[in-house]
Length: 77
Image (cartoon, rainbow, N blue to C red; front, top):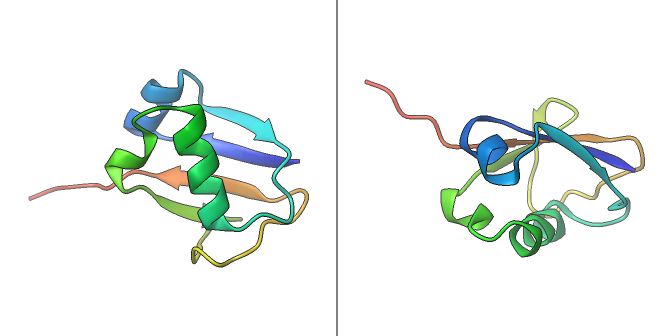
């Protein structure tokens, strides 16, 4: 199982701060498609994904026990 963490607007969109999903063996790109299918509007914010607290590439493969964090874009001045 992969533990998924949602922050800021993504937490509001999903209605939860975290959940678990059986996505071991899938890529980060697969994870983004899964989230977009499950939560309409999820892919509109161009969130980045961190796996085990390090930014991940779309081709990185998820392993059982990983923690994936969806990090929405941050703006500031």
